[in-house]
Image (cartoon, rainbow, N blue to C red; front, top):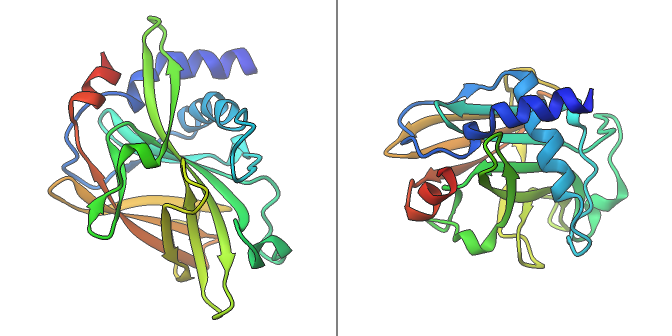
Length: 219
């Protein structure tokens, strides 16, 4: 099974590395391709001994979105249960929620500007032709603060979260335990929706810029 998954990932490696311009809402990625990418990228993300957040990804629950040759993949933490709230939500860095992998060139919009690439971790995967593809990465956690607000935190290269958005009620496409959508795209910026058990939801802007760095990643 592992060899099959790695073969699919190798054949599809360009999907997360090319430089198409974001122009429409992203489509749901084929589950087998999402799982293939998740297998390769999760292994690299979880191999970081210095990571501020330890996430054990559920490969079979991976979900993703794409438009032509760019996209995002969300890999939920294993054993997420809607009826159980872990104690870790009440302290930093929060309870592990998911790995978020993004085509190199994607960035969450923070304070009105795309997050600098240096604030996100950069992972690499090798295509079938031997070329390396760059992928941006954030570790996602859930945090319940003393003011009774629920947050989704995104951790990159800093000890503190580089993404902080509130979680409220909301319904998504029904994918369990987590769902990912990118909609309402205008001028290379859309809204990413992360839905938790089709009951809770958070949203943040994401921008895509096919700059020189991302073009090199696709070569």
